[in-house]
Length: 398
Ligand code: LMR
Image (cartoon, rainbow, N blue to C red; front, top):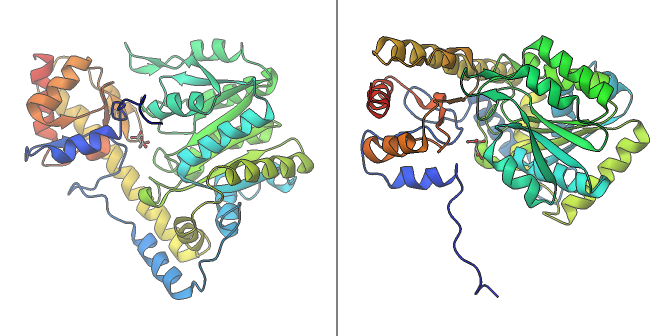
């Protein structure tokens, strides 16, 4: 049965975890996977999570099955968090949220839902987009194309080209957006641009799908939900995939959700039943621990306030590192302009290096980035930033 299988190359992002771990160089830096790190290079648990886990341990009485929707309190809290309690779609009963194993699980469920709802749909994603989008959707049988997004020359958004491309889309197309902290290029549309995009979605009639893996890490929880709130006020149908991996630092617990908005309450119930059906045929039902913890945090005034504050610390640190890195590169004598790092947001920026330069960073300096030269800015600290800049100068020959 397995005789025709050959070993596949490692995943472009996850493969770096093992390569980095095996590297004995004491100066090694992991700028690969999108994980927040503090000034000591650690990825600590949030205090609010530790507290909520204690409460959960003291209060839980059973581990029996929850059923396909998962933790009901989590689903309700996430829906209100992303759409806002005053959402019209919510009041009209047109919204349903189903807990999933991580944000990636939500994307896969979304792909399965699209295949059931309209198998001939085409999915359009930004160029570039998260590497796993490119594997996940075609892997689920959804055909995928790209729309212009990032201008490598100026490290900025190709907004006019993006608008032109979106105006070609229509019913039957699903257009994928990153809510904030664009992965991999760190550039988001501004609020006025989001409004223009939402207007186009409304006129053209395509279905927006919003991936929000980094909510709260660009400008703040409310601000980072702007795009999907605009879409939800204007569009009849939507798909959202949300994740608590980064903003609750619960990566390995796999906490995520798919949220859909349908044209009316009856259709929303129908879509929810299809989601339950596709998950039942896949993993049956989602895991409970992580979402139960988030449920406790979001339903406690104190823990919720603590979460907002701890999220703010992560966001401020990343923004501070962006400024520091771009200033230090400018002061280092490197001629190339890296000031865009300070203007971008979230964990990632492209350094604009060739694959050969990326490999030199890895082989000569034990600095690990994805081949596209996407770096995780959150991995820098006082002990490694200067070393990185020296290595950068060397591979740029400056
Ligand atoms: C990343 O892009 O590094 C993260 O989203 C983690 C992952 O699963 O790829």
